[in-house]
Length: 262
Image (cartoon, rainbow, N blue to C red; front, top):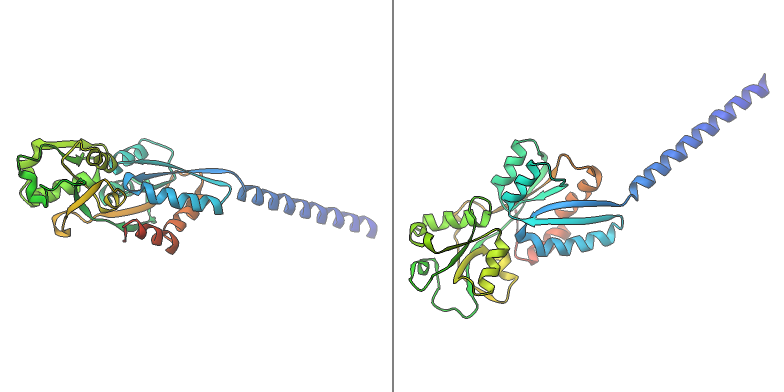
């Protein structure tokens, strides 16, 4: 009887140890599983996020980051339509808040991370535009602006021009861009006489000049919220990337590109 009892005990211990090893192997396998995370982000974040992603992937060899850059409004609509996105980094609080209100992003997994400024830019060497008031001159034929309904920089530009009582005077001159980087390109290639972009975009180009900066009381606050999309299939990895993006290291990199901490 004692021998039989000992045999049963040995078998049970063996089974328990085997299950423990399988569980540990499963956890290790999950930790080292190759994962691709999709981040939908405002076009103005392209340079700094590309740099940060390179650093992050070197430290997390099993994680690849795929970016979908564009206007915040278009990205918001894609998420609402079921696009497979893990994180959303918006240049507009109102576009982001729509996703929170419609239960695509939890308020508990979001943060107001950055701030930016709106600036008026011209092609390098152009001297007849020195401020917003010069936009009404006849010599200004084309004024580049993001589509106000979908491009946050365009919305802020519309608010600025309206508060300066210039909107009706210059509306016929508009050349619309699908995102802020396209507006920047119009100025760099001399396809527009002036345009509205974020200060961070302007600082990234040596082909343009900043001639005026919109005061904060002329437009809504330019806030960049970051959040985890609820239907992510990689919750743990998304949370780790989310934490990294508002770490001191990431914020310091963003500040070097001209962003301000939110």
